[in-house]
Amino acid sequence: MNTKSTTKQNTTLNKIPIRNIWLLLLYASDYYKELDEQQRINFEENPEKIVELTAEIYCKAVHKGLSYSLSNSYQPEKQVLTRVRGKIDYLTTTRKLLLEKGKIHCRYDGLTNNTPKNQYIHDAAHVLLRQLTNDKLIKQCKQITNRFKELKIGKSNYYNPVIDQFNRSNPHDNLLVSVAKLVHSLSIPTELFGKETLNQLEKTDQWLRLLFEKAVIGFYRVNLNPNEWQIESGKRFKWQCTQSTDNIGQFMPEMITDLIIENNKTNSRLIVDTKCTSIFNHNSFSFKTDHLYQLYAYVRSQERSDDRLSYSASGMLLYPTTNQSINENTTIQNHQLFFCTIDLSQANMRIRECLLSLLAQST
Image 1 (cartoon, one colour):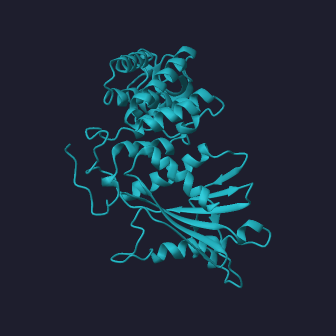
Image 2 (cartoon, rainbow, N blue to C red; image 1 turned 60 degrees about the vertical axis):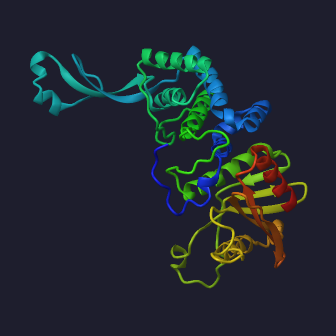
Image 3 (tube, rainbow, N blue to C red; image 1 turned 180 degrees about the vertical axis):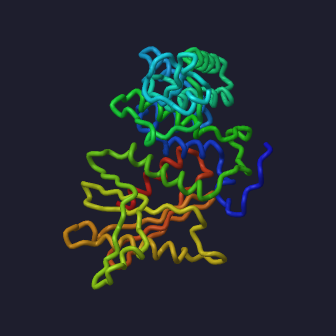
């Protein structure tokens, strides 16, 4: 595979089997929560077939969407017409002498199914065609691309539901977008497939950290009973400041937690912060000082007299590693702190077991 050399920062990513990168992408995707229990088992037990399994569900979802007709939306259009529609583009009309021909150039919003969302769903089929080897699935994807072409729907590898007026009232649209997003995420080069490792990849360990964070959050959201567990991500903590100057707030750094997990039965709280570096300081076997200070600040800053769990909350630093397993804990000022790793070079089902066992020991 011809790729650029990885940077010196890539100390973990370049050692992880691609099947486990795909497993993290699955956990991090919105689509993971759409799967039923049997489908999740199929994905987790067969990460080597994750593209085929995704393709099967993509084809079924798109065929269903096409049978009901894809959603439409108003998109800006411009056209030379014989009557006014929307707003007249006077400059173009004058420059092209259209009035002399009894025509005008208009700009208006037209109802169309050639929307950014449908283009994104269409492009996912082309991504799959570059990776699939199953003749049946290849045929189905080609049928889908032909149908999109008949409907004059383009293709795009980018879609932003925030900018687009995303129809959240249509659950099938949500499903189509989430599975298409997973397909685009899986478009990592597949030449080194299965047991091989991806030694050169144009991704950084910062990319892995964000993926690892989202994967951990997504995994726990799906696999923990919502009647027993509460999960919150991206919560901001405020510094316990008193007697401050008026402008101190604009200079204090933000504290944003990756993940907070609470157990209703055991009345416990765990604050998880994910990293993507070595768990140890450089040239030593002591835990990273700045990471310890950060976790300590998290557990102490959330203490409040009206929050009984805040004074006994635990904290965890969680690192993705390869061929290394660390699981240590200590208690500092009534807060239990955990220093843990997840070995991403091991079997995928072992990764699942480790995520669940880490939570069991800390809450």
